[in-house]
Amino acid sequence: MLEVKNLSAGYDGTDVIRNISFSAKRGESLCVLGPNGCGKSTLLKAIARIIDYRGLVLINGEDISAAGRKELAKKIALLSQSVQVFFPFTVYETVSMGRYAYSQGFLKNLSAEDKAVIEDILKKLDIWDSKDRMIDELSGGTLQRVFLARTLAQNPDLILLDEPSNHLDLKHQIELLEHLKSWVTENNKTIIGVFHDLNLARRFGNTAVVLDNGTIAASGKIEEALNSEELCKVYGIDIRAFMRESLEKWK
Image (cartoon, rainbow, N blue to C red):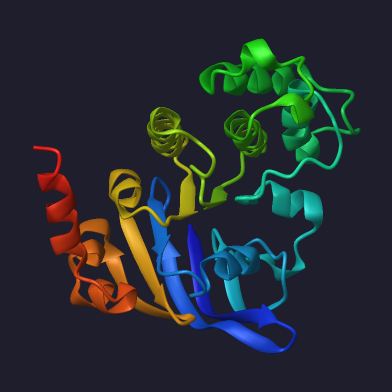
């Protein structure tokens, strides 16, 4: 469904990622792993066409470089790790913005289908009872779920998640990832998620791409990527030994 070919991108004339190539199928949850500064967020921004890039990004075989904003919104959605609030809309209004590509106006003229989609997502993420609250009154964890709901309401082919469990406690992290996994399989969609927590990545992903200094160091099935020697080289520690030592402390 997604093909990334020879993708390079960065800031102020300096490439952060270089010649990245990989693909992802429908029904797949792909994790992007690597240490801070390796280019994970830059990769997502380039795929979402937020920053300029060189190379190709294909969705269902179509080059997205010339797609209009509404057309692109039906193909790709990006949920960043930022939870900044610039305008104090209600929860319902904020999630309604996800229907922008399908409606004729801003926060108005929602169809019956739009309203059904919004209500279903708010209930699944357990924020229906907060639909009339102003988002500048919410905790960071609840606000992150609101922004996720807005992203899901967009119903794109591909969702890009930059640290999707950011600001959430452990219970809500697990619930969030389980909901995302179900959304992928039930709707035959694709998700690419950036993770720092390798345990959450293992729980969430089918496949993985490991970045090191802007290039791909390892890729493949999630178990293969997490067990590869390259992963230890990239992070500079013996990942498996660290995980085993941590697990022993729970016995």
